[in-house]
Length: 122
Image (tube, rainbow, N blue to C red):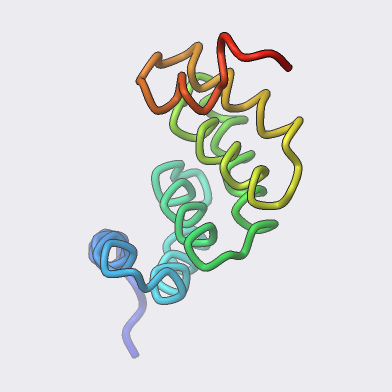
């Protein structure tokens, strides 16, 4: 098997996007592992792998990947929202609420604002 090249990593990334869209998160994670091993600084690949972990119900790995993305991009509203969904699914509502609120503050999309519960008591 030939050595992977930057071009094959791009192909793997795009294929992982397609697999995730086709509801095959496990396949997406498998492709992204080699991409991230070669390019650990690639935040887009890490965000996609976090989404794939979430889709595969691998909540702890998803949480860790979303946290890496947020360390690099603390103003990434989607990453805050997705981390919040991950924490919510892991039955950690107080931590989730914090990230829902950060997401809504960074990007007041209706779904982010609704999830943040602004205006509700609690």
